[in-house]
Image 1 (cartoon, helix red, strand yellow):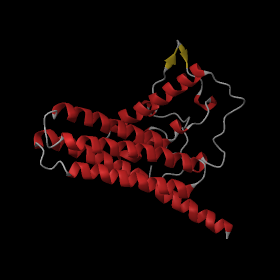
Image 2 (cartoon, rainbow, N blue to C red):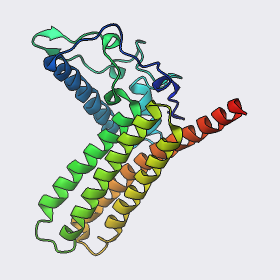
Image 3 (spheres, rainbow, N blue to C red):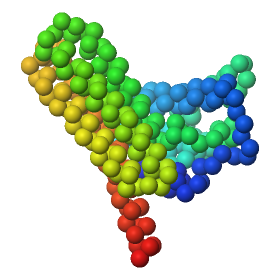
Length: 234
């Protein structure tokens, strides 16, 4: 995951295969499968969170280190492959037959998974600090900032999927502003009980900076594409 290349997520490469007609049950199966990949990413991220190269390493375990960042069919270590999910005692349809939706985008999966871990940490902190006047007032702004991060990431990925790299960059800038607000909420908690807050802050800051790193790589990719398109149009 040394860089985020998403050319295959735009320009029409991710089209539905064949005449896809799914009912609500089919889509529910699909969504459950995507939830599975989301939690699989989070499991790998938590397992390898102490590695300096955790973003790149986990991406490789998810088979996202291919040049087009599409899910790979290559075999490898067992850890690389998420365990299969069975629905109604039948195996899921081959992933190659599934349509592409934003749920399958690597950046959406990575950011969403890390945000889920932040929400879980915040829930634990809230339970421990139920009567701490130094913490409770800042929990809501922090949570709101996380939601803004998620929303703007979703919109950024959608824009990039449609090939609008300028809009994607603008949405990522908004994501960064929301992340800065989250960091400011943490800074406001310096006076809180260190036994309660310090472990939370250390873990959360690491994850926030990982999300920031993903966005910065995405922005660099978008700007490269904007420049490339400008050169081609000149």
